[in-house]
Length: 168
Image (cartoon, rainbow, N blue to C red; front, side, top):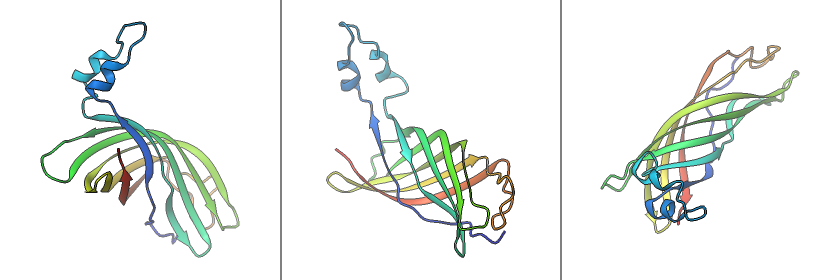
C-alpha cells in the first residue's frame, strides 16, 4: 500500500457562457426556441467539458493515474470584488491506469464531482484562479495490485489546482 495521496497537474479546457444577446439571436425559421433561457438557469451559468490528468499516487517506478473527462455545469457569481467565485458539478468517464508494477491495469469507470473556486483577471484577457474539487469514482483494482492494493468501491479524490485561462 504505501502510495502517496497527492499529486499535481495543469488544468485546461473550454466553456461557453450563454448571455441574453446570444440566446435571443439564435432562431430556427424565425422561432427562438431558447429565448426563455435568459431569465432562467443560464444567466450566469456555463456548460463545458474538462479533461484532467491527475497523478493519484507514486511509489518508486509505480504510478496510479486518473484522467477524468467530464461534462461540467458551472454557476458564476459576479461579485463586485476582483476575485469571482464559482460552484461547479459534473460527471463522465474516468480513465484509470496503474503502471510500473508487476500487474499493470487500466480501465474506465463513471464518476462525478462537485467543486468551486475563484477567478481573478490578472491582465486583459488573462485569468488566474484556484480550483477545488471533490470527485467520487469506483477505485477497485481487480485483481488487487501488488503496489496499490485492492482499492475501494467508492473512492473520494480531492484536488486543489492553480488555473491559468485565456478569455475573450
